[in-house]
Image 1 (cartoon, helix red, strand yellow):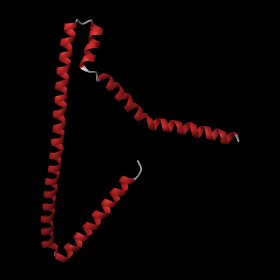
Image 2: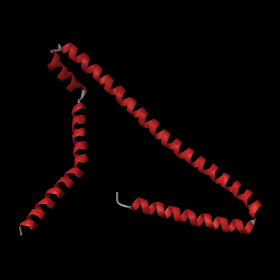
Image 3: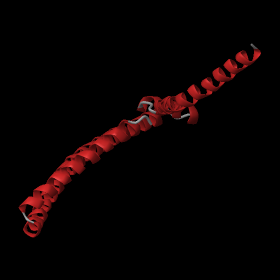
Length: 150
């Protein structure tokens, strides 16, 4: 009886560590977001903080707040530009991929024509069938590999 209770306690203890380890990344992400959100003060809040820390005059505080507002606007503009560039790059990437795929298909067709001239039409059909079967086999094995638990 003592052995069973002891084994149950060991299992629960081990399981608790396993679950804690799995939650660890989520906790780190949440903490990181909390510290980031703490840094995302408005221009007024930052100016108020500087006023408290440095004893700024009302005029200095107004100028600092205006500067922070300009910096925030500039930063927002830069972020928008970067997002636009990212969208362009993704479109360019898709376009390049399609161009490369078309070029590859053209090369395969040319190579097949040359190969057919050498080995004949009947053997070429057998080769194409073999190649198609092999591609199906490779794709199915790749998909099966992706489905495996990680």
